[in-house]
Image 1 (cartoon, rainbow, N blue to C red):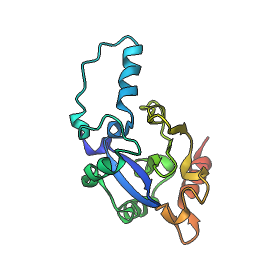
Image 2: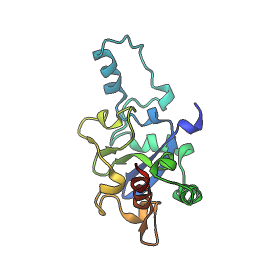
Image 3: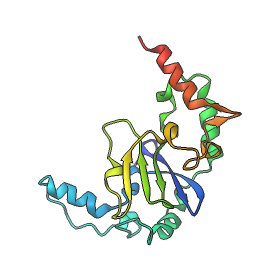
Image 4: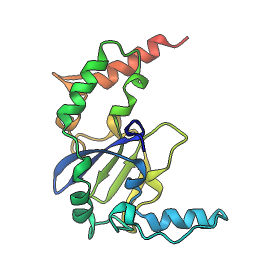
Length: 176
């Protein structure tokens, strides 16, 4: 898969935030539910050994440590995202000019909550969460409460300015 097809994901686990850039499908937390959705839709689905996802069919509280360890090669420092964002910011006319840098998924493993926000049509990651977890489609980048996703963890906020809000305003100003 071409790296341009990768998505950014932020994970909160044990009160720490980690950022990843990888294939979207790696973030289907409950692969068994995902498979069942294909079967329910009438598709023939071959058995999945989950080898492409480190042999972990369900990422939940019991397996998240193992999963995050396996995902280490895909981890990205927020400073790398910040630098890429700043490079594009000057010429960006809207969010779409930097959309590949923003997280499409926020996995709050501490609270067993998953929030997804992405342009359609895309795999609805929030629908395939482990039992006991909650998933929802929401713009967590702008709507998540401070205690849940602190501003200091949002690489697009700098010197008290939310640059995502600036991009959104540019986009509105450029609409016909």
